[in-house]
Amino acid sequence: MEAADLGQHISRRFNEDLERVRSRVLQMGGFVEQQLQLAITALAEGDSESGERIARDDYKVNQMEVAIDEECGRILATRQPTASDLRVMVAIIKTITDLERIGDEVEKVGFIAARLATMETPADHYRAIRHLGRLVTEMLHDALHAFARLDADQAIAVARRDRHVDLEYETIQRQQITFMMEDPRQIRRALEVMWVVRALERIGDHAKNIGEYTVYMVHGKDIRHLSLDAAEQQIRATAEERRG
Image (cartoon, rainbow, N blue to C red; front, side, top):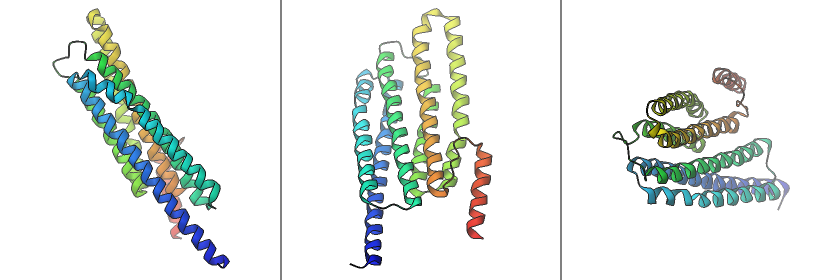
């Protein structure tokens, strides 16, 4: 086999490896997203059994992260990735770390849902939590969609929505403090609710991170410590340089 043919062969095999790993990341993300939806439903419906089952399934997320991480290590050791390919591998490794941490937060929500099921369910069935849950679930879904399509514009749009999640989180926290001050009998439940919304806010942060890794994959720009407006300006400048 000539050198040119060998290079083409290595590149093809690397691309196959890369697509297989990306597919496994999306499978992991899909499972985490499903667990998040189930945990919120268990909370709203006062389903203790479902809450505990969801929490105990976190080991599956951990196993997925370890398997993908090991596969990435094998690829890096046996292939010869270019700088751009190496960038993709770094982003994948960072993404599965955030997905594993989302799994940890979902585990917390599941256990808290099980505990709250032993208390009287409020008349609104935790409407504010369900709304916040929808926001972060949509953020995670769209971040994974941007990852799958290498869509930097959608990834930045996801990151922008994190501020909305933060505002909702702060509102619910203030409400729970008011409830505790007005009726000390509500303290235990209010504290549990505050832990749930804290977990959901953290999930929003991790979804934002995944969006930022997608921008890094596509444009090679680390925007984690930039304002989103500045990040968009850098991306536009990079695109114009490439066109020029």
